[in-house]
Length: 171
Image 1 (tube, rainbow, N blue to C red):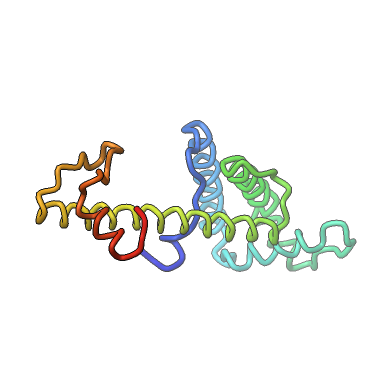
Image 2: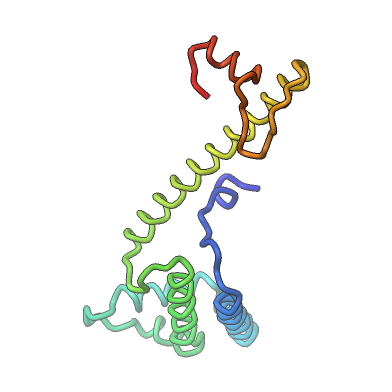
């Protein structure tokens, strides 16, 4: 696990059909890029994506691609690469339940918020597990008869409840 991938807030409860569609687009994109680079040894992913970025930056601004960029665009099938990326972006937005036309800034804002929300949920779950572990340890020593896990815990005579009251906490 990495510090980036492990906590990344992937979409939850994505329907299988949508997952299949994302997978199919991603595989088609990968196959296209591999084919282009096999057919044109001078083209690299960096060169293809620099041309793609130039296309996106130039959209509506009137600056034409340079002759070298146009050559890489045509041989590298950059318009097809762009179409696959646009389709993947729209499908992933759907997986999150977001509109497909969000800016990069809005996407990052939403991902950060979702990450914070999930981190808080995980912290609550970890705390609940720790509380249960503490109770089990205390209960084992005190022979507590509470029904752990049934929603009837802690009972009135539970040592955990008594120790919590003595410590000034409420449970």
